[in-house]
Structures are given as structure tokens and as C-alpha cells.
Amino acid sequence: MKKKVAIVTGASGQDGAYLIKLLLKKNYKVVAALRRNSNINTSRLTSLGLEHVTSNFSKAEIELTEFTNCANLISKLKPSEFYNLAAQSFVKTSFDQPIYTTHVNSLGVLNCLESIRNFSPKTKFYQASTSEMYGNPINKIMNEKTEFAPISPYAVSKLYSYHMTKLYRQAYNLFCVNGILFNHESPFRGQEFVTQKIITSLVKIKKNKQKFLLLGNLDSYRDWGHAKDYVDAMWLMMQQKKPSDYVISTGKTYTIRDFVNRSSKYLKMNIAWKGSGLNEIGYDTRTNKEIIKINKQFYRPAEVNYLRGDPTKAKKELKWRPKYNLDSLIADMCDAALEKY
Ligand code: NDP
Ligand code: GDP
Image 1 (cartoon, rainbow, N blue to C red):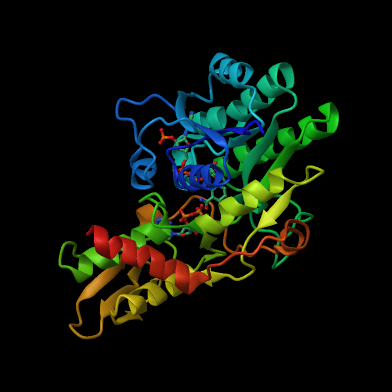
Image 2 (cartoon, rainbow, N blue to C red):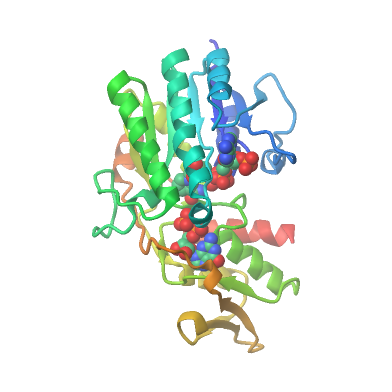
């Protein structure tokens, strides 16, 4: 039987690396779509053994904002599945770079959809949508029917693509799905995101390689899962008879402070808190040394205070079964950081 071909954009990112590994295990021919950089960042792929081109694995250049580039790649390969994971993915940066964020996260997605519609209408399309699109709804648990009220340029740009993906499904009968993924982390998570920042800093502090960890708002809640589990869900969505949108989450939520406490416990560090607001500090109870400080620079102009997703539809229809919980996620990230530093 002819092998399925999949294109994965955002191949140098956290999810791209895990998804490519999964697709290769499932016997796909995978094309890792990377943008040209002065310093091509393929360290995640390399650490999974995906360095060299093989009969099943190759690399292609993609710049999402360039229609010609998307159209040429799609019309040439006519892949069975196209996973669009590329994005300016950091919420905080989207406040400083709203126009760039919109170019990539909105128009970039439209470039892919138009290329599929015109040149390869049988290609199935996955769009990396996000729980950030909910903003701060009244509901305390969010599902596929919860109203969206985005409060960052990132979330607004992703909501545009969410709707376009749905529209191309409805108007042109294309197989297009949105994975509405809640935060997911792993040893491959970017250094700017709070989980990786906390774990990397605590490990460095433990090893006397860093003095302080500076954080912003400790009181927001996030529903954190493991990226390895979440790429399973992406693939499952693409194997359904009918395309649909799915929330992928754990159903549990914790504050940033909880995440610090659980990570420090795993690392056998004893942290206690005192003070409040910008004057709050976290200190080592054995040495009394301040190790965590709050810094205004890490606050956002608008904050999503509480995220908790209801994955019932994915569990029922996709039979998605995540393997990690928050503590095993933290253990995986801490072990990787302990080895690295
Ligand atoms: P990363 O930030 O790790 O990866 C983003 C990828 O997009 C990188 O490979 C980056 O390439 C690529 N990229 C950025 N701009 C362009 C562009 N103009 N053209 C082509 N490629 C580009 O993200 P994650 O792996 O964590 O997330 C994957 C997707 O899922 C993203 O779309 C994200 O917004 C979304 N998402 C993520 C969640 C999470 O918790 N991780 C939650 C919900 C949604 P380069 O290396 O060159 O910068
Ligand atoms: P996001 O949910 O996609 O924005 O993922 P992040 O990991 O960037 O942020 C998660 C939450 O942590 C947000 O509510 C941030 O305000 C909060 N946070 C607190 N301190 C920090 C920090 O120093 N860096 C980041 N990235 N987030 C922080």
C-alpha cells in the first residue's frame, strides 16, 4: 500500500517534533516544513534522532506568510494530511508584535487553506487552535460550545484562523479540523513559557548556576497537559470519518504558584512564600535565601485568569486517553532539565 504523506509546519517547535516522531512510527512519509533562518533551529528534531533525510523523512522550506511558498509545496506534494502547527505562539510577544502575529497566525493559515482548496482539495487540514481564544468566560469549564472572547492579539489572530478553518469545511466541503488545545508542556517547551522557565530556573538555582527566578502573575490558573499526549489527539482528529473540532485538555487546573510548589517539591527544594502582590517573595526555608521575586515586566496588559477544559467529546469520539498528569509532566521536565544543566 502507498504510504500516506504528511506535511508538518512548525516542525522545529515543541509539538512539531513530537508529532513527526508519532507519524513516522505510524509509517507515514513525513515532510518537516521549516522556515529559513540564519540559524536553523532543529535541535528538538535532532534530539529525537531526526537529523538526516531518509526515505520517509525529509525537510522542506516554508514561510507561512508567503502564499507562493505554501501553494508550491502543497501543489507539488499533494499530501494526505497537512498539520499546521506554525505560529508566533507566545502570548506576551503578541502584545509587542500584534501585526506580525496576525500576519503569521491569521493570514498564514489562510494561505494554507487557499492552497489546499485550489491545488489539493483532498488534503486533510489540522489547525492548531488554542484555549486562549476563550479569554475570561463566565463558565468555569470550557468545551466546544463555550463562547470565545479573546483578550490578546495572539488569541484574536488564532480566532480568525479557527473560523476560517470551519468556514473552509462548511463552504468548500474540505476536511478541516480545529484542535482547541489547552496549554501543553514537555522538556521541549520553549524557554519563555512559564513552566519551562520555572523548572529550568529552579534546577539552575539548585546547582548554584542562577540566583533568582523572576515571575509575573502567580495567581492565574492553567490546565496543563503533556505535549506527547496532545499530538496523539491531533492525529486521531485527522482519522475521523467526519471532520469536527475538539477540546483537548486534562479537565484539571492549577495556579502558577501550585506549579512552582510541585516542581520545587520534586526537586527536593523547600520553598515558602511571604508578602503579597509585587512584594511577594519565595524563599528557601533551609537557608532563608530569597529565590523567587515578582517583576512587573512579566505581567501582561490583559490576562486570561482561569483555563480549564472539558475533554469529554475527545474522550468519547476519538477515544483519546492521555497518559500524563501534572506530577508526571513535572517529573519528565525536571529530569530532562537536571540532565541538561
Ligand atoms: P512553538 O513556539 O514551539 O513552535 C512554533 C513553530 O512555528 C516553530 O517551529 C516556528 O519556527 C514556526 N513558525 C513561526 N513563525 C513561522 C512562519 N512565519 N513560517 C513558518 N513557520 C513559522 O509552538 P508549540 O509547538 O508549542 O505549539 C504548536 C502550535 O500549537 C502553535 O501554533 C501554537 O500557537 C499552538 N498552541 C500551542 C499550545 C501549547 O500549549 N503549546 C496551546 C494551544 C495552541 P522557528 O523555529 O523558525 O521559530
Ligand atoms: P500562555 O497561557 O500561553 O500565555 O502560557 P505562558 O506559559 O506564557 O503563561 C501562563 C501563565 O503564566 C500566564 O497567566 C502568565 O501571566 C503567567 N506567568 C507568570 N509569570 C510568568 C513569566 O515569567 N513568564 C510567562 N511566560 N508567564 C508567566
